[in-house]
Image (tube, rainbow, N blue to C red; front, side):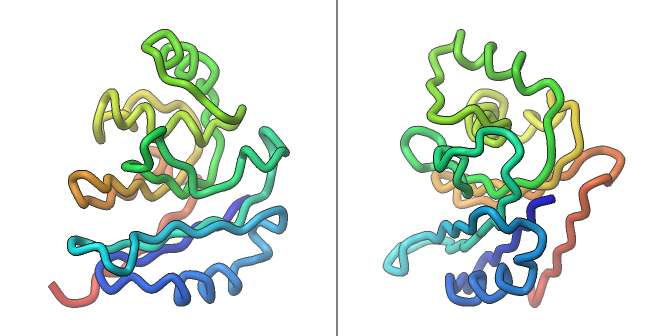
Length: 156
């Protein structure tokens, strides 16, 4: 079981690094962080993942993962049961993949369907998706809540 953590607004990569250290037991195989550049004039986000490698044990499965141009980022925990058919659909549309993980289909599905992409997923999952073009953070989890997702909003 992987662990994800993140901050939006006053995003601080070091805080996310500390958050991930506290849940290291959730994913001992790899740790990764994505953060918008400090000099970025717009909204800021930092998100990370402690990975338990199940699909694609290679470094290509590193998270957070993005689309080809780095405008959509995902930190993910779970399993998408229908990812092979979704990946095939995306490949038929011209999307290219670097790994064999179910995670990597998520930014591409978002490019195609927007937030409604979650309705196409069959599985158990929780993930954060950062749309850098829209400067919007989305949080998704499976319909039954098998994978936990906790969040807090401070202030407005």
